[in-house]
Length: 387
Ligand code: SF4
Image (cartoon, rainbow, N blue to C red):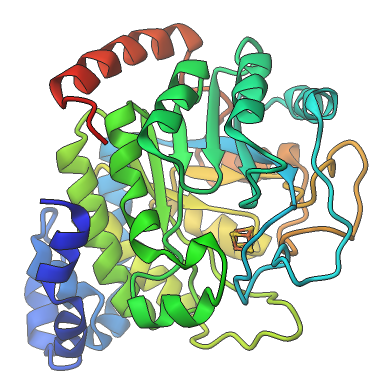
C-alpha cells in the first residue's frame, strides 16, 4: 500500500478531532512509559498533555541517550539557486517576488563548499528551488561528482524527481534526501501552492517512496509549521515516518521542525506555533519513534536551540546562509528566509559541548556509501525498479 493510501485510510482529520476528547487520566496512564503505541502518541499530543511536558522531556531524553548517545550531527545548507517556478505563498523564492536571481555555476558551488569545509563541515545539504531549466538533473549530477571526494555526506533538498533521476542522484554520490510535504492537509496545501508544478500534492507525497526505492540512506521529512494546525501535522508526520521506517528499514528517517517565524511581509502565518507546542510535538514524536532523527535548524533562535539539545535533537545546522553564494559573498538580498540563530558553527559546537553533548562533523564515510549503494542496487532489482 502506498503512503498516500495509508494516509487516506488513517482518517487523520478524525484522529485530530478526537484529540480534544482525550482526558488527563488517559495522558497520565501513558506518561513514563518507554515504549508507546500510536494511541499513546495521540494522548501525548493532545491538549490534555500540555501540562506534562517536563515528564515527557525526561522520557524523551532517556530514549535519545539510549538510542543516539550524546551526539549532535552538524550540517550546513548550500544554496545552489534561488530560481523557482512555483508560487508558494510563504516563500522568499516565490516566482513572483522581485529578488536578484542567482544560480551558482560549478566553480561557485566549489568555492561555497570550500568555505564550509574550512568551517569543519563534512555533511552538506544542497538546496535549490524548483527550476529544472537552471538546475537540471545533469547539473546536480555534476555538482555531486565534484564534491563527493571532499564531503563524506551529501544530501539534497530539491524539487521532487522521478525514480530514474533519484537513481542518478544516488549513483552520483547523494546519500540523503530532505523533502518537506509542507502540509499533509490537501485543502491547505492547495491554498498555499496556487500555481506551478508544486501544486501536485501526490507527486510530492510519493517522492519519498521513489527515493527509497532508488536507495537513499537518509530521509528528512517535515511540515512547515505555521501553515496548518500543528496537531494534525504531527499525526500525519508520525504516520509517514513510521511508514518509511518500516518500508525502507535500512534508511535513517529524520523529522525536521521548520517553523515559520519571519514570513514575507505579504503573508500572514495562518496557524502560528508557540515554543511550547513545538516542544510538545517534538517530545511526543521522539517518545513514539525511538529511531527517528530530530533536526532543528537555524530558523530557531539560539536560546531555544540550546534548550532543545538534551530533549532529543540529533542534528543541527549552524552558520547557515539561505542565499546562493552567501558563504563567499554574504548578502541580505535573495535569501529564502531569515535565520534566527546567527552564531558561527564553532559557537554552536561550543554550546553543544556546554550542555554535555558532542558535536559530530562527520558520521559517515564515502566508502560506506559505496557499500550502501551496492545494497541499493540489489534492493532496486528486488523491487523491479518499476517506478
Ligand atoms: S518553497 Fe520551494 S518550491 Fe516553493 S517557492 Fe520556495 S523554493 Fe520554490
